[in-house]
Image (cartoon, rainbow, N blue to C red; front, side):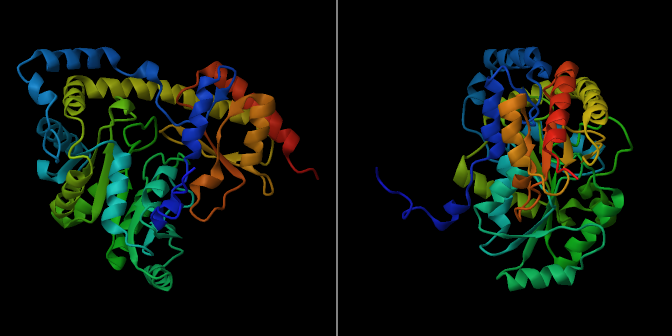
Length: 407
């Protein structure tokens, strides 16, 4: 077999298989109760609405345009709809501030490519979204832990980045119901992030994939909205808001967006022209039609379903988890984050769970840029009904009790 390794670029050594993608294969095994993949429940997709939308698009006078090449910025009616939606969040912008990408994951890849030179530093939370680390890794950065509780100074970040051979380029965070922890940044933490970015003169990447999925509690303005309140003009803001239809309408259509300063959007458009020219025209048109007809009703439907499942999982955790195990209590999203006693290992627990209990989850270590977090794991409640949740968590609680250090 031909050995390709010596031909590959050095950056390829930092590309690792996604543990979550691999775990999704377990969904094909009917005996497994899976809390692993943080994916939407397909039973909640507005499939009939999309069927009507595609029929309308392909039977009308614009059918040829739907199947044709299109502009790299994105389908204009969809961008116009997003301008109105961003306005509801307190983010006043125009169509030139909105750029359509093939899922927000592509947006993260583009932003990593745009900002990171080898040895530059990206500030990320410990833990952080695994997909973001995968997107950024190809551009050979260093990582430093983003602390928003006032325990780090801008100067300390800058000095650490300099010692690592580069400079800090951006702070990445998921402000609402983060993947993997389910936690939400307070208003004070968001303002701290903006202050830190100003001092370091860096970008802020706000991953808002779960922003629409709030079940309870008081909504906090997006980071970009808070910055806009101070600066008055989105083109003077350093925050880049990454949104997605994957958690609300249809992940398979791969439609997301980035909202930010025009000067950054223009650079991103050039990247798309070099990569895939534009996101799928017909998929953008279908998303625009379905969103315009009933986005609010769809969001209400999935919120109600996921809130009920979140409640069921929290109830089961309280009932079955042994003393010494802690977990987050999210106000929305799809995830709960568990912390095991020191000395336990989430990966070893998963292996035992698959073997004896037939329950899947995601070990936490993969979400830490420094490889820590071995005693943590993530569970998702999005695709499990209440009976599955009760059964699965009871099995996990029993397993953890058996595996916990004695004494």
